[in-house]
Amino acid sequence: MTRPPLPPFTHDSALAKVQAAEDAWNSRDPERIAQAYTVDSLWRNREAFFQGREAIQEFLTRKWAKELHYKLMKELWAYSDNRISVRFEYEWQHAETGQWYRTHGNEHWEFDKEGYMCRRDMSANDLPISACDRRIGHQQSN
Image: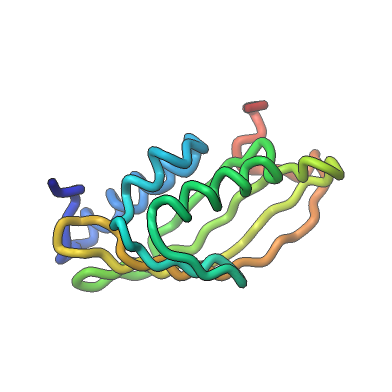
């Protein structure tokens, strides 16, 4: 099976890949999201390093137990044959404290020839915000 769009990426296919990722992550469905990655995909998420779909699902399940009302925006930054870099912002409310945050960061993605992500490298910073300063998906209360 393949997961289009496939590398080598064009501007349009890279944009489509980024939009598909944004849509999947905004679903907050760890199983759905993990299916976009190779079985042995390598991840770095801030200070966490792990590998494989099962670890991805476990990580995302923990993430959204803490990060409530998560809403994400991704933007294509650069692309090449089988790699895409994005900048992103997402907003969320801390489950324990109720504090809102906006997280800013960058991701670098590498894809196999079937269009599955085999490597994801993410760096991010969290900025505390007030609820009235939200700008991503604030019309929704999911």
